[in-house]
Image 1 (tube, rainbow, N blue to C red):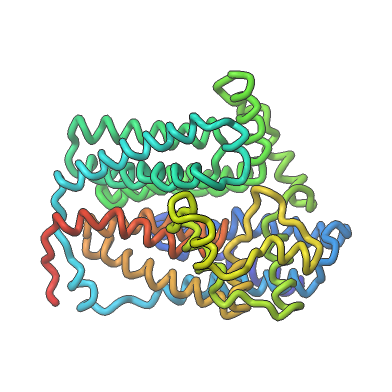
Image 2 (image 1 turned 60 degrees about the vertical axis):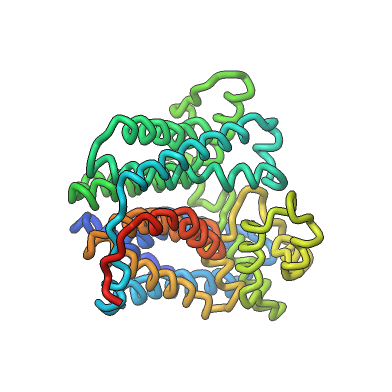
Amino acid sequence: MVFFIIILFTICGLGIFQLIKNPEKFFLYPYTIIYIFTVFICPQVIALVNSYYAGESIFLSKDAIIRVLIMAILCIAMSFIGFYYKPKEKYLNRNLLIINENAASKLFILYVIIGFYFYYKISTLPLEIRESPWTGIITVYHFFSQLYIIGLIGLSILRLRKTTLMRNVFFISSLILLTYTVIFLGRRSPAFTLFLIVIFSLYFVRKYKPSKIIIISFIAISALVNVSVEEYRSIAYENQRVKNKFPALSKVPYLKNFLYYLEGYGVLELRNAAYLAEYSVSTGNYGLGRHIWNTLIDRYIPAQFTGLEFKQSLQFRSDLREDLKEGLGYNIPTGTTLTGIGDSFYEFGYFGSLLFLLIALIMRFFWEMAYTKQSTYHQFFYIFALTISVNSVTNQISNFLPGIIYISIFLYPIILTSKRIGKK
């Protein structure tokens, strides 16, 4: 076990060293992944090992922990291998577009308005529904509310190219909403999304490069805050109940929580991944893509409109939470994730790391289009796809395909109003 821990931490350490040495590497997909593994996975490795030796991870074998360590190493390796395979020039040239910036701007403003409306609809639902696992109409509201993120990304880039009053107004409005979800709701993913949108927009348009101090500070703050999200979120929700609108950041002992977390206390998503790997190996029950398919159906076939029976007829009879409960007696804590390490192993064992290879290949194509070819359309796409790929590590790999379909659908109108200049 120690051997694989050393390998994982050495890889992440070398990656972070390269990031600090040359902060511009942060814009490259594999180094963004290195950052995520360093602040999200590595602390959990220490905590999981400590909890194992303390006897708190019941029914979890040493081999299961070794599996997730190997899988983490493979996932990072595949991310680097896939990204450094550059697409052929002819494929890049075929996809060159000159977008109609005025038409794109109007579309993004529309998306902000739609997103705001459905976000408002979510806010009108009882707090108990919003705090519980989301099912029913709230999932439909959430689906359309996320359009403001696309609008924010688009307007962030377009306003830097040409500033107009409307672009600024709707950009600032959507920026305020995203900031609200971070500060007042304690959402972890929107915080990172906010950071990505700001620095990538500045990088693509103004060639801004973050300083070493910014990178070091961001890594340190991310690691400390990440383990305190649940406590901060509970304070934020309690403040909503008593009508105190501003959560007190100072109430959360971030450093104390981080040290306590490393000892193996608290909720560990990596423990979910280890149990999931243990279940797959011990039972021989691998998903073989079933969980990815089921997630896709969950996102795009709303039972509210098609009927629950029809929706379930399209899905495989598989429930990971119930399978783990019946197979190993382990209950996945509510609100926690499987991690991309966990559900990719569940699907195909160690071969599941090839999913990260595939994602890296896709990200390299969009990077070349966004950076090398300076395609504005692909800059929109790359930033949003990067937020999805990060979510694929922290939450589950099965989120990537639905996310790519989502951005493809809602950015397609831009293609219709663009001029294709690539040679076929």
